[in-house]
Amino acid sequence: MGLASLVLADARFPGGGHVHSGGLEEAVSRGLVPDVASLEGFLLGRLRTAGLVAAAFAAASVVVSGDSRHGDYRHSRGGWAELDAELEARTPSAAQREASRAQGRGTLRAARTAWPSPVLDDLVAVHPRPHHPLLAGAVCGIAGEPPEDAARCVAYLAVSGPASAAVRLLGLDPFAVNAVLVRLGPTLDAVVGEAVSAADGPPSDLPAPSAPVLDLMAQAHVDQHRGRLRLFAS
Image 1 (cartoon, rainbow, N blue to C red):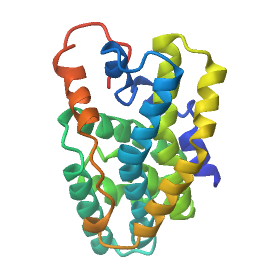
Image 2 (cartoon, helix red, strand yellow; image 1 turned 30 degrees about the vertical axis):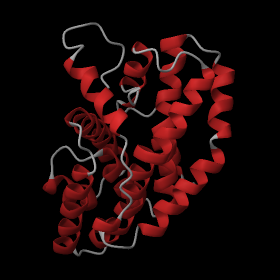
Image 3 (spheres, helix red, strand yellow; image 1 turned 90 degrees about the vertical axis):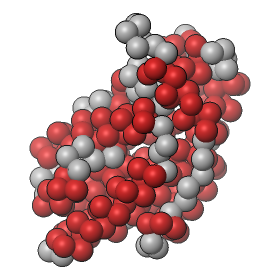
Image 4 (spheres, rainbow, N blue to C red; image 1 turned 45 degrees about the vertical axis):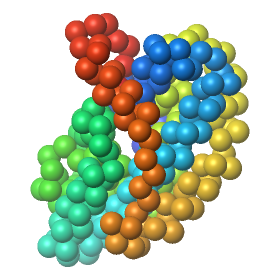
């Protein structure tokens, strides 16, 4: 992985990812994830569904960013619009769409400082709050990194964020939680491979695995806990 994808995947990156649990807070409140073993199952499912979708769109965003870098603004903006629409369609929960755009907006502020580029202008021209996978892929493309790096970065974030949240929510042994992430390595590699293989194709053909339980819990986290104390926004 190149420096840009490593920086984006760093928990200390000032993109606002630390306020999102990826649905884990709601799962914990419902008693679905009480320990390390159940956490591993939760993360595995999230990686194969939401993680795969995010990784595929991040990889495809690297391809589109190349058009911006080479001055093909009309084609790149059309590409960004298509990616945005396809990712929106794959995110049926309004709460998850909001979480993705909130993280994208937070990352955008830091990205404009570290990686100033017309690529970001083209992306923001389509939507002022870009989805996080698109923004991450754009940054990796600006830095000259391949689609694989963007896919790996975003796939890792799909599980590392909830894993970190689990330590805070459940008081789990951080060493045991870290070991869970390591055991997810082969699955993460497979997800990255599938994401990259689809990156050059039409956005409509990008992976679209569904995760209805995650969608429902994301919406419940907002609707049922409105006004109540929560550790995480999602």
